Image (cartoon, rainbow, N blue to C red; front, side, top):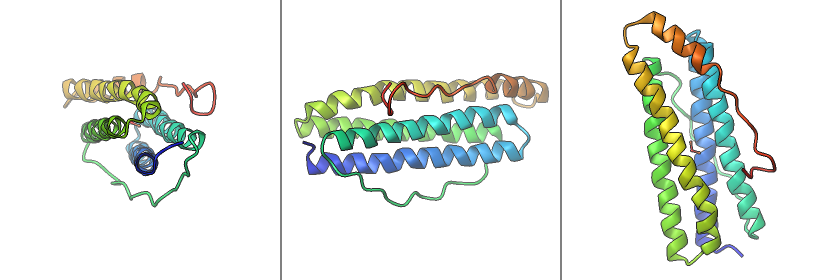
Length: 172
Ligand code: FEO
């Protein structure tokens, strides 16, 4: 059975993951409006990743006998001054999420909730990947600054990204 503090913290994180999805979906719309279909495809896959993260937490709260409570999702920004600015914002956002996951692990340790701690380790590892993949695009865009041809090439490359759904109900 999940404790009340952990239940609330995970419910808050479900909201944070759904906000991440909302933020990245807003970036999809921005990239589409800028005629950058590859960037939009990449962010669309990222949006699906975030929904998967939220559902993974959702399923865990349920499995542990908790109650999922959904709250309002904040409005994300609608535009950025460049693709680089958007990816820098994504990178910064992922660092923030990493901090939140670390706080959840701290809480699990404090509450002696070993099951939650084990569950959260998946997210600890996932955040390393999340920060790395966003930062890799930031670095590419920095090198491409002022070169429209390079931006076109990056757009084509990012368009290759495909979201692979997890095998079963949010588990991976
Ligand atoms: Fe769900 Fe991008 O962290």
